[in-house]
Image (tube, rainbow, N blue to C red; front, top):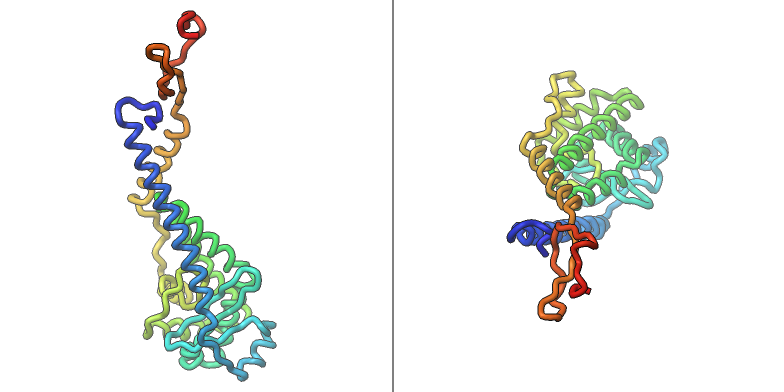
Length: 262
């Protein structure tokens, strides 16, 4: 497969393209497997907490909250058809009632805004375009914005800016569980920025690394070049026997043919 390019250039590009496709499919399948594995393990250590029932009723979150027995503090949303809020027993132990209400209001915002579905789709899209790292930058900034918006919604609803700040600061003393697939109150990558936002401190501007932008641009140019490369097939004959089809860019007009070619 020469792609109509001179020498072995087309063969090399085709081989690289094949490797890229295989790598992309492998990464996509790995992401899907990770999502299903994450979902499967959610209900292994479920416990109850009746003291939360009045608060859940107040926030209209009945049958929407699951408490997981875990030694790490975390709270997140997960699910597509029937998304729920998941809170660990450790987080319930280190926070007070006002802080728990803020956390639940934060996660309720994610449920109302369908962030669970959007972020799962973002993970799958990221795995389908591994050679466009700028997508990962967009997704990272999106996650940060959604967590900040959820914080603001929780504070507006309960006037609990102080409790939100104290809950976030408590998390800094622990090693939160990594939750890259879901919108999470305990997202370790956004906690520092969210605290600075609450305290009206200077927040670093969103950045798109030059290296990622250049790599994404090069990937786009390569793919675009492959799609517009003209490839024509012409029959080649030798000693009145058909030998196959060769890829070439040369265009033939009827005047170039002789009776022997027919």
